[in-house]
Image (cartoon, rainbow, N blue to C red; front, side, top):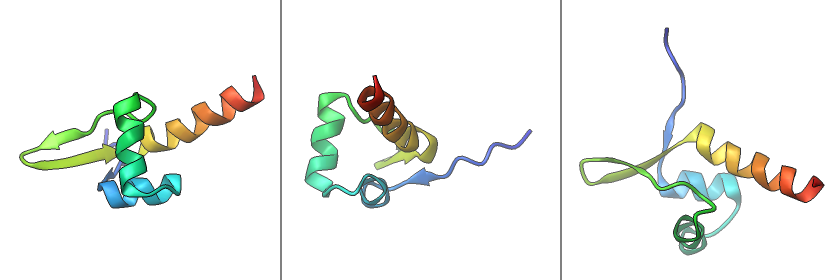
Length: 63
């Protein structure tokens, strides 16, 4: 079984959420965006987790 869930950089993840990189890191600190996966010195976010942030915001809006 192969799972295709690309790992995104902070720039790519912030672009999907349409926020600046400093705002992206504020949302990580707030717990709205999950903490990154650390690979050596790199920080990466699974695309599925970034997309689930959007889905959670939509669900909260509709609740």
